[in-house]
Length: 190
Image (tube, rainbow, N blue to C red):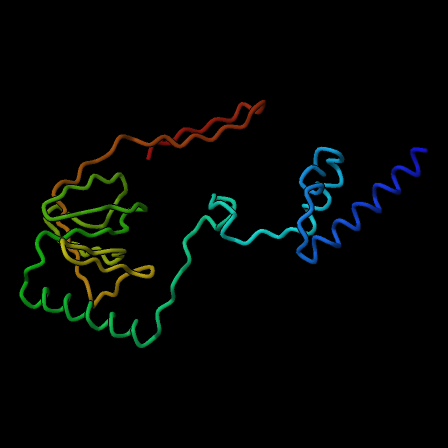
């Protein structure tokens, strides 16, 4: 009995769906979800395709990053020339304000401006009052522009100089050699 009802019910559903495909309105189809929810879910998941306007815009429906608009090489070259002209006019007028530089000195990177003091703990071969040139310049910037090296700026492009103000002797460094279980110890101060 249940078998014949189920096959009859499926036959009725098939004919209703065929009629609906021909744009015939059948009120039984609206109540189909209440009678047999599994069939209604199966039908709705495979046959109905929603347009993209029905899908809400969430972080999962679109990429997290904005779409990148690429500029042509001609436009990029034109923008490059405009920037170079602006920087060159500022440098010719010497109207660049207070400059800063990022230099690599004594195994560290330092951001320096005019009249800055740097305290290093390494030994350098310069006496007090000597001017030294910091050649590893990574970046130079002002109020209106920034020159970034890849990885360094050229020597002919930028010149950063420093003066040795004070040079004091450091504390004695102890160099110790030791073998365990051999009664061997040697201590030397550097």
